[in-house]
Length: 397
Image (cartoon, rainbow, N blue to C red):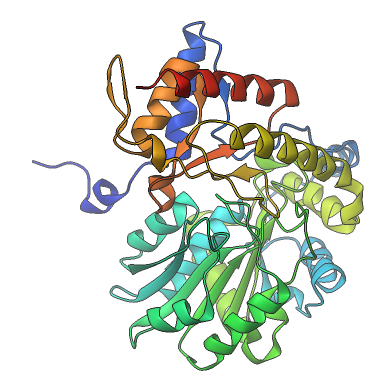
């Protein structure tokens, strides 16, 4: 007799978390592993944010918070959205959650019915597909490539829309590619979205402040579709607050109210102390954490140069985030002492076992033939990782 539900049996494990666990297992055995698999800044949370959290403890923010978040935090988010994104939202249109991941899941569960189609430009973040499948939605992949800088065209979007289409979900800057849509590209996509009033769009903007080329533009700035756009963001990446677990969404009153209702039955409000820390982050100018972005910019240059010189690796120049997504299909079919490299998963396992460098297969992000490398690590570790990967690749027959 089966004990577990079909629901959980269908749910795939996160590939990034799985690879990170394998790295920890090897490290526990005394092996020197360089982990470039997780999307986590290697910086510590800024002191001014930690000070706000300490003050919150002294001020006894230790009781149940309101389900959608403290009013003062939602007001701070509304001001941030106006300041940074030219977006007008009332606090009642904002829901604070335990990480942007929960914000995404809340919205999907509130909007996607069984059988509804959800467009995913690929490659996409690993959890998007599983979230949609959990809601019994149907994933519609729209593939991009290195040649298109991992961005889809309005024509591709139009071709993917059917009467069953309910939602489109994407990130910009992107995880796993670092590619970011320009204002002009997003306005062109909006022209397609306008023609399909049933289509709701979730924009994951968690890497908004880690952008090296151009300026960030939010799809919700297009007035004609604003009420059909859900903007998701948080403090994890730009402010190095991954462990504080605070994300949020901004949407129409109807959608925000539904997400708050959903959250009220699952987790209630996010940690009050974390919320006060996040408030300090929201009230700060993005320039307060520019030192992190500049470090990522230097690492990006190091990684593009190093990875481009590895035999069989083809790279673009990502505009944001802290990932490189090189095409590695030229290495498929090559062999080593324990077998053949048939796909990106084989290559990642070979690099982990041989070079002791953890990466993530492109197949986990919906696009085979690539791997994801996070450069949220020290320049010393990145340089050593390039050296190790190069050596391991050259040993393939």
